[in-house]
Image (cartoon, rainbow, N blue to C red; front, side, top):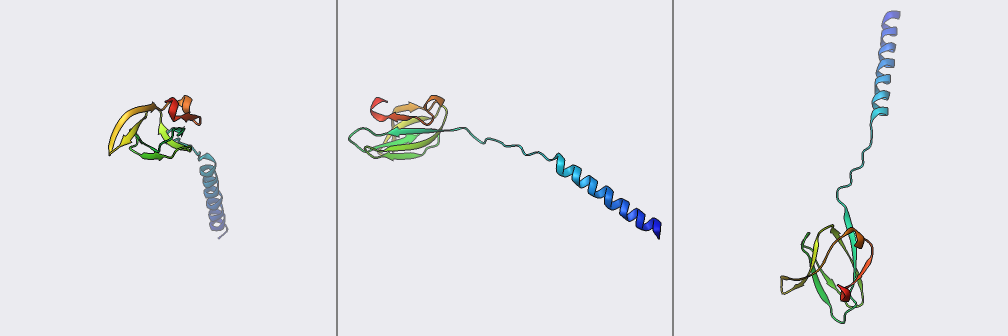
Length: 107
């Protein structure tokens, strides 16, 4: 009977040691899914302007006098958008533009 109790106790101790090794060996790895840039465009013109992000296909209406943030990936192109068609190129997103306000009249 003593041998049985000792064997059960030894099994429990060994099992708990194995679980603690598993817990201590797990690592958390963070993965950055994509590097989105925050492109800010201030419509400093006197008209409402519609634009489209050729990369994601999202369209935006830029009200006069307001600043709009658009999430873009590096290399995405922003075009004027009128009558359901892509117009002239406004800008190509770059890391240098990230978080900085771009004046529409200067683009």
